[in-house]
Length: 101
Image 1 (cartoon, rainbow, N blue to C red):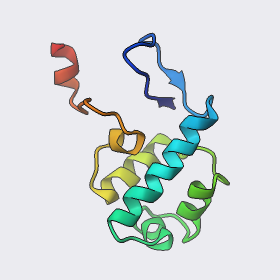
Image 2: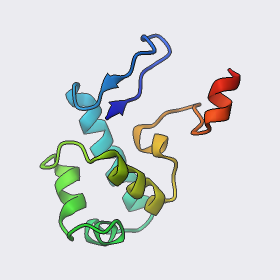
Image 3: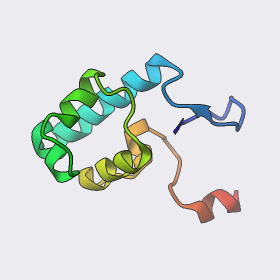
Image 4: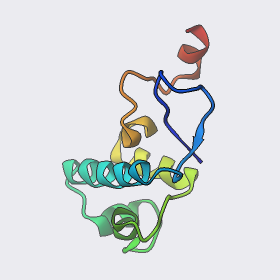
């Protein structure tokens, strides 16, 4: 899996989890978005088809980085684009928009 990169960095993606601050930011952002939706850790875990402690283990760092399909399902259940979990400000999830740039 890959994390975001800033415009100042190379366009080569960097592996997610290679920087502890990336993983910590993801966990904190997940908790923030989950709470904003009024969901408990157990309820969000249930909605994504995982055991009821799954989101809690992600948010505490016991699970380092979920698989991309799990991140996608989390974003879907939180009703946000995947990029919102990583705070990709000013970026679109649309492939067409990336090709037009």
